[in-house]
Amino acid sequence: MKPRNTLFTLARRVLAVSLVALIFAVNGGVAFAAEEAAVAPAGETAIAPVGQPAPVLTEESYPLLGGGSSRVKVWIVAQLHLFFAAFVLGVPIFVLVIEGIGMATGDKRYDAMAKEFIKISMVAFSFTATLGGILLFLLAMLYPDFTVYSLKIFRPILIAYALLFFGESLCLYIYYYGWEAMSSGFGKWVHLTVGLLLNAAGMTLMVLSNSWATFMMAPSGVTPDGAFLGDVWAVMHGPLWNPINLHRFIANIAYGGSIVGAYAAYKFLTAKAPEEKAHYDWMGYTANFIAVVGLLPLPFAGYWLTKELYAYSQQMGITLMGGIFAWLFIIQALLIGAIFLGANYYLWLGLVRVPGGEAYRKAIGWMATVLLVCFLVWFTPHTIIMTSSEIKALGGAHHPVLGALGVMSAKNTAVNIMILTTFLAFLLYQRAGKIPKVGWARGGNAALAALFAAGAANIVTLGIYGYYIPANIRIGLSVPQVFTTLFVIAAASLINGVMYRGASETGPTRWGDMPARSQYALFLLAVSFTWLMGLMGYVRSGIRQHWHVYTVFRDYSPDAFTPTLGYAANVVSVTVLIFMAMVIFIFWLDNFSRKKAAHK
Image (cartoon, rainbow, N blue to C red; front, top):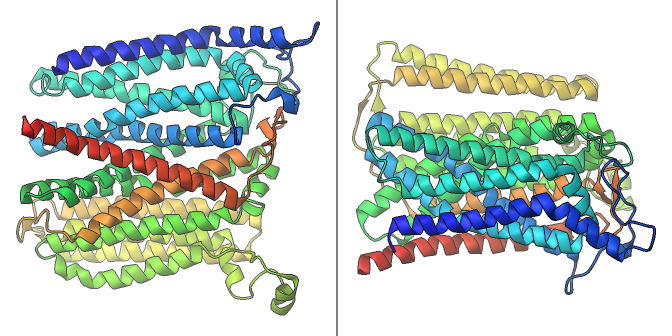
């Protein structure tokens, strides 16, 4: 089949799906309301109209579909949908940047890499749409009253969502299939414009869907009993909307980089020719760089989200950080620590491919020690689970030595130092094999060393000072610590970039000259990111406890309880295994299509 025919076929399918979604968005609420009214007793309606309170349900209000838990079914499908959605929204962002770099530099390698990145997101886009349709079906079947209530409030947004989905799909297919036709001259500018429109549509879809989640967590635009006040913007623009928008935007970039890094590792390990290994080694390094660049500011966005959550409801904040979910953050610390260590390990191994990189290998031991110490501080719990006899022997619930490491002063200090250490590893890798030509190189190196030392000292000093002030003031110290980290990163990048501009190289980078274990580090990043996203999704949904919409719409289903950590970890782990199996299938499918093309 010719690419043009394929494009038109896909466009017709997307148009059909989008029209169905649009019709459902316009008429779905009316159809469901009519169905509920038909089964309700005479003179009663199961669903209150717009402007009326949220319905009060019973356990019989929740139909069953087959055996098993309705919540687990929706949970798994929704989480798979979000995994793929984060991937297909994050990849076009850095693909557009990479394509722009290739156009500006004239280096065709960037253009080829950008096209290959967007290629693997094509199948993922189909999975995203399919899982979204399944999720909508499950919500309508298993939670009809909640679905109708949401449709009544968000109907204008759903109409815009359907139209934007059609626009995003059309831009994606034009962007990919028109790559060669618009590869030079004015056509390249048109192609970049299509990529920009693709990202604009995708980001708008993301912020619209975020409003649904934030409304369930922190409802706005409704009365205390759930009656819609008629202003959909007030519903969307809740207290958590902007923090989640920023958090997910950054997380999508990091997550997309980790998945394409796993793709590059898969291709590297299966490649036979040296030039293929070199290409996918370079692709893996670029993907790792993208993932870590997205990872570095991610904790700061998470702090902002948590701060706004506390401001909205102290009860939710205490439940999140000091209640049933507190121990989940220990697992989060383990996963984030694994991500930091895996990314740094990959960079350290990468020094072998750079002539002259041996000069920086002696710094690896020191950086590994700093990362390990900060990692141990970060996942140290404040309160230890003990029996009554153990508490009596210890003299309290807090360990007399390690208990001090469980407060936020220590943890904020640890994560900022880990971020600076990771950035230093990137800085050393960029300097490896290069000889600066500027006369002030010695002074520049001294300034960089002083900058990192002063930044680390300020972060540690603020962390220690936090122990001598009240807890409500201590939380505010995270702001100057964050600004210190960002200032060091910005200033060091500027100094190092100017100092090494036009530097001579000791030799070409030996792309492909990497041990196989380096590629397993890229797989570790992808799996850790995916598992971390699943667990944090459980937290975000779980803090609502027994509410569909927090304090507004009560959940009376048989699943109206907060899942235990072990129960949730099992569900999330199964979901991660399913997702990674689907991702590996996408990787295999790409290899299979290449073999078929080569055979022809």
